[in-house]
Length: 122
Image (cartoon, rainbow, N blue to C red; front, side, top):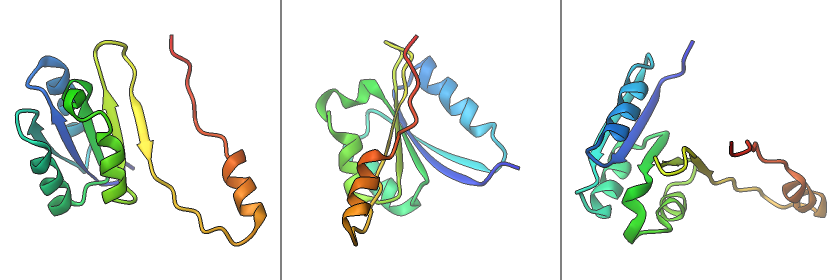
């Protein structure tokens, strides 16, 4: 059973963004709010504040003026997952923030040794 998700999609009005939106909305229980890339960054932030989504998808083309947008979103909204996508390389980048309370040196070592999930670019 698919867990309910709230998703914000900030995308260009093109075939790629429309296709991503279609795939996401077809998942049972997932609510997708689409925002045009013609809207300013402040509009995206306002929607994220209001909706409190689980995930924000960003079409890579939107980042031309805001290269560290995923990091800005993660700093402002802990627990948020940010996924960027692009037609240029068929690669999605997944960003997440994890806070770890360091009580001992072993906590520091564990954070360094933790293996991220990686895939190879084909």
